[in-house]
Amino acid sequence: PLILGLESSCDDTAAALVRGREVLASVVMGQNALHAAFGGVVPEIAARAHAERLDLCVEQALDEARVGLADVDAIAVTAGPGLIGGVLSGVMVAKGLATGLRKPLVGVNHLAGHALTPRLTDGLEFPYLMLLVSGGHCQFLVVRSATEFRRLGGTIDDAPGEAFDKTARLLGLPQPGGPSVEAEALKGDEKRFRFPRPLLDRPGCDLSFSGLKTALMRQRDAITADKGGMTVQDRADLCAGFQAAVRDVLTEKTRRAIALYLEESPSQPALAVAGGVAANMALRAGLETVCAENGLAFTAPPLRLCTDNAAMIAYAGSELFARGETSGMDLSARPRWPLDKSAAPLIGSGK
Ligand code: ATP
Ligand code: FE
Image (tube, rainbow, N blue to C red):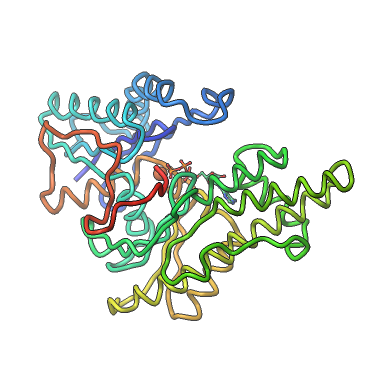
């Protein structure tokens, strides 16, 4: 079946057409320029932009795929979690299309979209372990089926992408912070400054990143007070130290998550990463090492499918559609929607 997917839960408006594991079109319109002056995503501006652009994204996707709306078999849409105004825009457009075309509507959890992407890109078999690391999220999930997820742990405060972005801001580097901090870190000495390794002394897979930002601020202020300013090398060494701390903590917690995951006796054990931070080469190297040590295959989908997009929503929608899990016209937009129904309430763990 041909599935049209819509995504509008944060600051990317996206539409895609997917058939099986084939992506016929994936259109993503970012909003960086709209929010740049405010130093973060403004929900009202985002919602308005989504409402204005969703139709355009759909048209463009249909053009690219060279198909018509009449060829679509079902409409999949992100129904949460995310910024409520944006999610609502998407859900309303999807309902309009489903009604007009008399085709089924499939509400998709945005996180399930990320979590199922390795099946789209690499055909991974259930159950696999997923590390979702982005600007808004950080969690370990065992993906057991399209609807069953076991959450092993996650951040109790900031997401790692957010920490990279704040680090860049504190050091006067351009946004998004991940790529610019990584580039600086390549020229730096990770051992010169001491950064904490938060929560490593505690059992389990939970993580914390807000302390790293405080540590960075203190080191920066100490250097500035001492020498009246920072040299290029100081900055590179700070970036390297910070990045090494993120890498070490994520790598060690992944080791623990792998041990829990292996209790499920997967037939083809695999770890997949998703989210923008998965682009980080230092982190990837750490993850590849623990995977190799434990006999897991390591999968990192291409970045355009790791960050927010609608192909993942269309694909997740197609898995739900195949299981008969369609939604009614009463589908609602949910700002919060944890994947693991049994998990304890999350304490401020991202959006
Ligand atoms: P979410 O999808 O969870 O709502 P988001 O849309 O902000 O959040 P993504 O688009 O998946 O997240 O990723 C963006 C984040 O990834 C930014 O915080 C950015 O700094 C970070 N990032 C991108 N490239 C790198 C890199 N090379 N190293 C570290 N972080 C990176
Ligand atoms: Fe996302």
